Length: 254
Image (tube, rainbow, N blue to C red; front, side):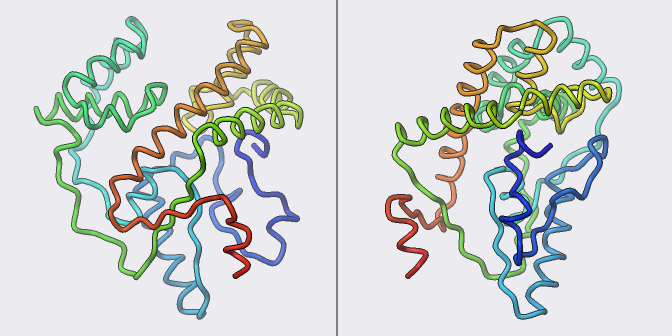
């Protein structure tokens, strides 16, 4: 999974230790909570060596879990989850997403409708507690280090152009071949790590469910929508420092 994840190359990583790359098997579950615990341990280790850790990425739930912790949520209920999964199969994810919008609009706004695990979890928590997941208070478990949160800003039209260009480059670099090799090895988007933008659309193409042109369109559209949700999410952080990407290279050099 080098192309679809835009994983930094060995050359780009040379001389700079990178964490959380090539550490898990595809089948191994991983969550924002597990990330927050492991990341804090590594941050502490890096600081003890008098080095400065830099956390980079746009997975908003993971960022939030690292900085603030996660809510105390009830244990899952196998019966409720089984019913929701059956409804997902019978009615489709759009129907369940519309229901989540009705019972928990705040959580729904932060959710990629195609992320079925989080979609089902949001409804499961509501049916278990009678409360929207978004209303359950976050633990007072903020990151025990001083930090600064920088958010890069780019003109929206330029951002979308770059997204479209990046998708074309990923296809040229061999994304379809990468996904085909995963399919041959028995993997598909039923694995959470592969139920992600780029991979799931190529799986659909390889199964003949969409044309090549439709696949490209869907990857670009879904990536743009995800970027828009990221922008909306980061607005909630009052401590965020926004930096324009225009002239960013010169700013770094200074």
